[in-house]
Amino acid sequence: MHGDASPFFIGPHRFDAPDDDVGPTLDRRYDMRPLPGEKVLGRHRLLVAGYLLGPTETRRGWQLPGPVSVTVTDQRICWVGTGSQLSLVADDTSRARLAGRLTGLMTGQIRWQWPSRLELPRTDPAQLMIVCDALRTIQQPALALGGSPGEVIALARQVRRAVAMFRLTRPQLVDLSAQERDVLLLRAGPALLAGETRITLPGSLPVEFRSRDDYYRSGPEPTSWDGFAGGAASGRW
Image (cartoon, rainbow, N blue to C red):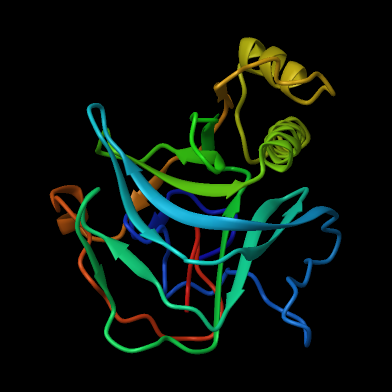
């Protein structure tokens, strides 16, 4: 699948597409390698988790126990972790871990075509949720990045501006109305968040779940992950 294609097929609980070939590539130091012409805007160390949002509940599908390296560019956000173990979360009280330890690298990304909004829930530690719309369902996959309040707020501003500029400068990828363009022009500015907890991002392109079962599954099921790096939306082992 080409990186700019739509829809983008993902697994909703892991927020990934393990058979895709457009995921992030790494250099010898295991840092994300930018594509030709891609500009790195910032690097962070943050906690990462995947969520599936519904109209009446927020379900955490997976999380990593320690901070990962997060890179923000003018085209996407990527994360890279090493030598850890994925925790699949069935609900708020019950957890099941994959048997054994997963070795090697874990990587993932969200391209700036996808997010429909950003959310800053009141949590400890502070958290930024990058939320995408999905076809044929009201459930929304989201990637959560957690850290100190100052760093999370700075990341939210960075992502907000990067998404807006990406969509404003690529009319061949994103068809914007005049009203959507005006909103993105505001989002691309340097203004502070001023207490905002939800930031809409007009012009998003939806993702689509990889399997019909994913539309009806009530909780995540442990799944073996293989491979080195990649994934269409976030997370491939």
